[in-house]
Image (cartoon, helix red, strand yellow):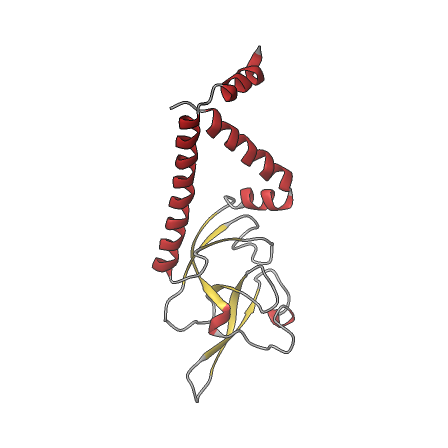
Length: 180
């Protein structure tokens, strides 16, 4: 009969109690992942403790597909640090190096200017219209570590959504047909 026939027979033989058990198990897995993410947010002080490098603007230091681990502390930001920041009007965070720091005398607040290591000029063209500097609230965190190439999974699933749907469907089918 083959694998597909066995899978269909397995789905037909599922009882309500087994289906509820598997649904609760799946819910617990998803809930655990969310709890871990929120705990990482609290520990790192960053709204997004893990990000994927999406472009080649930071090569050769970080390549497209690298995963960065972020931490945000109260320490002042210094030139040379790699930061991840959001720009008003853009949804995707940007990973670039701080090239210039401007400290305001009257308030002590720090404004920063960034640049991608592989880019010719600074990032002022990427900032919101009329914005010359990044402020502390734009910065999501500092890069404190990375895993090379692991983020390609995310990039592939974003650029080719059919792969994401096939993977989710296969995992769902696996959960439904597994027997405890």
